[in-house]
Amino acid sequence: MRNKKQFLHVAVLAVIIGIATGAIAYWGEWMPEPATREAGRTWFLIWLTTIVCIVIFAIVAAAIVYAVVMFRRKPGDDEDGPAIHGNTKLEIVWTIIPTVIVVALTVVAAVVLHQNSNAGPKPEKIEVTAQQFAWTFKYENGVQTGILNIPKGRHVELWLTSLDVLHSFWVPEFGQKQDTVPGQTFRLVITPTRLGTYPLICTELCGLGHAVMRTSAVVMEPADYDKWLAEQGDKLAPKAAADNPAEAGKAVFTNNGCAACHAFAPAGATGKVGPGLDDMSAAAKAAGQSLEDYIRESIVDPNKVVPKGYPANVMPPTFASLPKDQLDALVTYLANGKEG
Ligand code: CUA
Image (cartoon, rainbow, N blue to C red; front, side, top):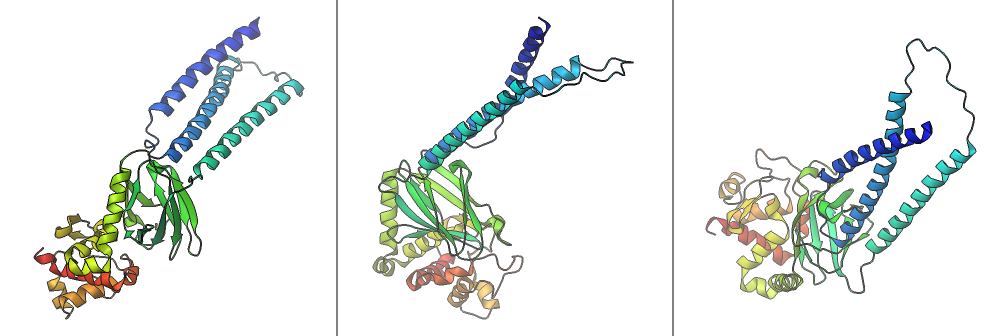
């Protein structure tokens, strides 16, 4: 009779603790709202695990609190507690229950992993290259950008690699992280479900500019994405670049993510990590070079002349590998910035 009452008390206590813990879990802003199908599945798994943990925590905490309060040593009571030997039934129960829970969670996790790596029959393939300290994204038609553009509702297959050290690809709203390793290529599938612009962050300490190694992932309507990709392809075609160098220069500037670090009025760029690019004639003069030569050298060999107040080794030297027509277009575009 007395046992039954004690169980009831512990059960009520467990419900109260469970509700309190659940409220903290539910109303705490632990994670952003998922923006991909993969993140949705991962969130489901996280919540399932959290609920299981809350139930176990509530039962254990209730039993402990009850025991501490009700079975305290009375003043003057110096006797030993009762000697307890094994309880086979209890041991079987507390082995089987956790085993079932862990196996069940493992099965659910395996299903989620399997679904999250399924890219469907015709995914959008994008090559992601990390380098100190920038991201570049190369699309199937050869267009290269510094901002990741992806279509809503389609499977996107990212192939990630690094040119120098370890980096790590992370968009919090996409719910997945992937390290990039020089000499190896890793695959990551994302299926955006929500339009918007999300931060894309390097989450592996990779050197002096690690903190600035960020850009954006933009989820677009599929039709807008197709149109944008085709337009970029046309703009970067050598003939179009020759016809309209300013447009081509702007496309190179935007696509390579220059705006993330530099301010440049004609492109509407307001980055503050690197020096402003609006009028470099004074700097060119100080370096004893023509404006165009100075700009070209600063892109190809950024550490040769580092403007005062800015650290060296932050600007990636790899823009030297831009195709020559794109580099020319960029230099002209920046040199004309004053009038632009
Ligand atoms: Cu790349 Cu941190």
